[in-house]
Image 1 (tube, rainbow, N blue to C red):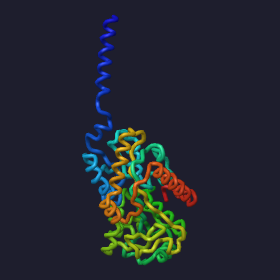
Image 2 (tube, rainbow, N blue to C red):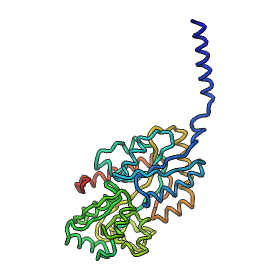
Image 3 (cartoon, rainbow, N blue to C red):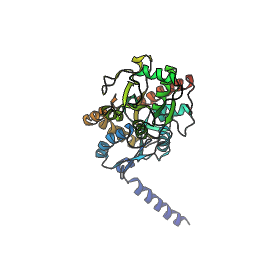
Length: 327
């Protein structure tokens, strides 16, 4: 029996010795394509941003980065998918203010925005633009407010989804202007824009980049931007705050996140690669064309601080304005 035990022990030790000589996870990673989860449909600002930062990452990791669309619930479905994915570095996501800072204040979500993700990179900040169908007879924010007060609850506005920053931009506008508008949520900015142009919905809070072409073509009329300062992309369009709604601000932040508990070596590799991507002049130029600002790499600690600050800001508005999922 002792001889048999010694033989078995030698086999186990031999197996372990062979295992220890294998390359580490980080040395073989990635050996296949990476899924880049997007909580919206194609055609919106998130889609364009994901493509811009996905292409150069492919060159750095020598593998494909495949965008996987999981729209719905203000991008919370996509965020949940990332949070619950295996932390092996093969599933990451482009997250924004909606699923990380707004949705958790409006409903119970199946993830914690501060503990269930691994911050990999900050991407950019962008304001929104309040646009209307050209058939709506208003030329500025004050004219829209007057019309809304004359037709309480009869005017509708589109957003990219419930609990998205586009939704809350509208609710903040209603709250500060003292008006009633009907919220019409979509599963992404693309379908919402299509219906605005088609006249099915007269008002929309849109990300600046995708709206620029429609504005230039005369298919949408801009009334005001939602940032505190004017956008370099449409400098002739005043801010909403300038037009009488003092302190009005609603901006969207994009961040690349992975699931919690990713291996440190893979996390460090992705963070370093994204720092290279975000610093690339071509990437910066393309992101600026979408109306983005503050295009820069930020540390994981800085990213978590921004998420926490925005979570508190939007939570305070939701409570003060009594905003609900039915708003």
